[in-house]
Length: 224
Length: 224
DNA sequence: TCAAAAAGTCAAAAAGTGGTCAATTTCCTG
DNA sequence: CAGGAAATTGACCACTTTTTGACTTTTTGA
Image 1 (cartoon, protein in one colour):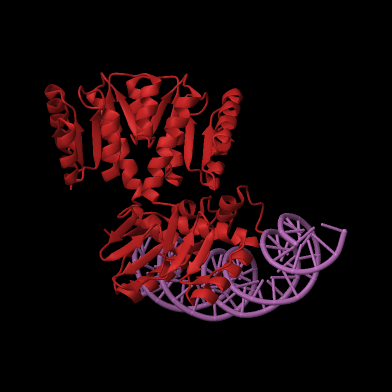
Image 2 (image 1 turned 30 degrees about the vertical axis):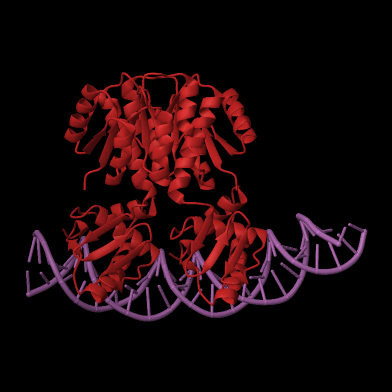
């Protein structure tokens, strides 16, 4: 679902420009031209708000406070005024950032993206990699096939992670050693062979499938 | 526990000014003067980072990317350059805001406060409730299971607080030490092991449950 | 078909990790 | 300053993981 962005400004020219540009960037844009409209627009639960704080007849800072009571998304101020005191007032009212007019669309979208990304991060997106029913959670370092846990040891997990991050690519044992152990392999001790065996056993046990392929004379690769 | 702010800049004058000012404002300040120091400082788990992106010999944008791989807190750039392209580069590297030099301390603290507040909102309020009935009041530093008090000592409480604030995340003993003691752990003294044991005993005693999980070879984590 | 090279298997040694306990030191509080 | 609680240390044990090396099997190409 596209991010929803609410634009609050009374200059029609500007709001149209912004909303069409944001739509081109893949966002969903909503416009409110006064305080009343703004409040009712909050019902769409925007992911980010662009708020002009220099509207005649409306105190942008007050409006910001009101918005804040209902919503936690990032609020970016659009402003022509740039006195330091204004900034402080705005930030203390619950705003998250300032964009000073005139601004380029390029800068605006960069900032919008930065704030949305930031929001995304705090929602804690668990990094998950999966391949044919095998689900690997990088954050928790767990590995499941449906309900079945794989119970990989650390080294084993590291190897699986490395191979899965590079599905289809072939790595010889030396490269795997360097990637996982973080240092040069002096000769072939056979550690990798053994670890690969353990991993394959666990995979077979839990899934009944083959995930790691041997490319004779070349190395191993995670099947696509 | 005071917010921890990491200042990354190579100008001693400025870092001292900033850190003393931030301390006056009730924050805990840390300083790093180069990339290496920065990375190792991340172990204190700062709540916010002030990053100079115009340091000679260091590419601030690259450093920012590196930081981002390890940490999710807000990153504010300090910069003299103000070209639009710079801004965009920075924001895309994972930065959250810009402060252009010269800036007033007043503006700086307002921005810092705004970002921390924003972070706070997403982390939710002072009182934290966790798995079934265990209620930890961070303000009063008390911990109850229903009517039963846990009677945690100070260190014990700090550890519980840290783990609960980061439910589900795995921390090795070194990181826990750095986060709770606020300094680098030299070797493993075993303090953490002992504290974890005490905490577990008290938790078990009062609740009959397991809250802290051991992830072999990785560390401990508070169960989700 | 056979020998050499590569990959796979197995069990045992080595290294590392976490839990526990008792002893010691540090820190408060009265 | 004494006495007790809290924090820390170090030693020990049990256990798991990692590595090793000897050995077997498979693959390949002369």
